[in-house]
Every structure is written in C-alpha cells, then in structure tokens.
Picture 1 (spheres, helix red, strand yellow):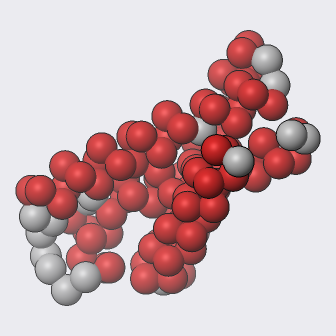
Picture 2 (tube, one colour):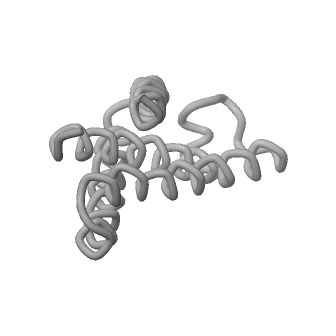
Length: 113
C-alpha cells in the first residue's frame, strides 16, 4: 500500500468519524432531521460509532508510516476531518451525511482489503 492510499483511507475514516460525532449534537441533528433533540439511544450509538471511526484512523496511519510519525499524522487527519465536517455542515447537512457515510464505508473496506 502506498502512502497516498494510506492518506486517503485515514482522511475518509476521519471525515466519517467527525461527521458522526457532529450529528450526535442537538444542533446538527436538527439540521439533518426535523427533530429538535437527539434520542438518547441514537446519541449513544452515534458517539460510539464516531469514536470507533476515529480510532480506526490509526490503522492506515500506522501501517503507512511508522508508529512515531503515524501518531502525529492521526492528529492531523482528525483536524482535517473536523475542518471538512465544518465546511460540509455549513453547506448542507444532508449531503455531508451521505458523503461521510460513503467515504467512511469505502475507507473502512479499503483498510480491510
């Protein structure tokens, strides 16, 4: 696997994770749905899924680079995913949800490939 592929995988997973964590908040969940509050079960599921996706960023980062460089890059990819999530939320929450789901799915599958 090349470093370019590892970078794309890490970005896809971090975008998915940050987006899922954003939708666990009432404000962004209301942008996605017509509900004012996130149901408790949905909130917990979204938080757990977001945390798992963000932890999964470590796989391509550590595999593509060494542990010392990969750990620093994980923080960078988390920041890049957060920046992309903020930009997507200001544009359209529904399109961001679809884009994040597709990229997280592709990133997760390509990590297992």
